[in-house]
Length: 276
Image 1: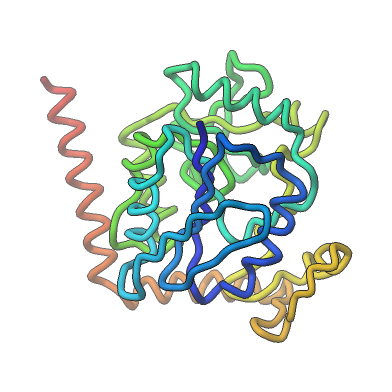
Image 2 (image 1 turned 90 degrees about the vertical axis):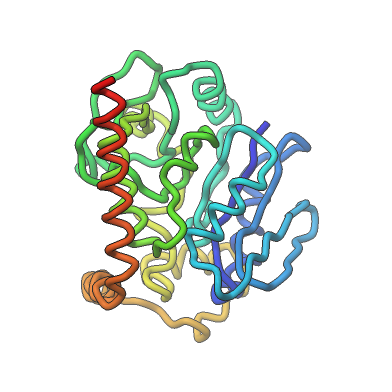
């Protein structure tokens, strides 16, 4: 029924054991779930979980690896999670199953973001219990936050030449053109139950380093993390790290040009279709 895809890379293999330990203890898995780890070359297993490692090579761009993993998944619904979004508390399975029912049984719902950060993106009320609709032309309409997707829709947003940073920017522009049904958990839901997928204010890793806020939380779980491998990022460093990611993208103009060209082609095709 559902393919869980964790997108990662070999450089983050030190995070896999703690990630899957928390995921196993906080999410009820049964045989209907396919678990895929999308990475470069390394194989991986975790006791009690049937993980399929899709190793797509060191030379394959991040977004292309993810695209391959999605295409090879066997189910129509994708539960997409980044390797830095550690699951920090138990998921209410009944509430999660409600969201599955919504996305499976309603044509107008293509995507359900399991996190809602008020002020990050604009939302509107919807006719679905505990779901807000993500506005059509808002910033951050497309994010790689833990979320449910219809597989055939998600593939429209994955290019084969983009970094995670560029993919979210370009994915948002694509969503303005394609205008699929994007939803997220409502404020009412969060106020009553908290985040359905609880991972803190953001992922526990910020641009390669452990987020300082996350360290005491992770220490309480006895995950045996060696923080010296990647270091700890102070909150004051976060903005600088984000700016560096933007500069790194500018240093790769060919990839940027390809991405913007794909947006223009998509816009042209959309316009042509509407004209017909």
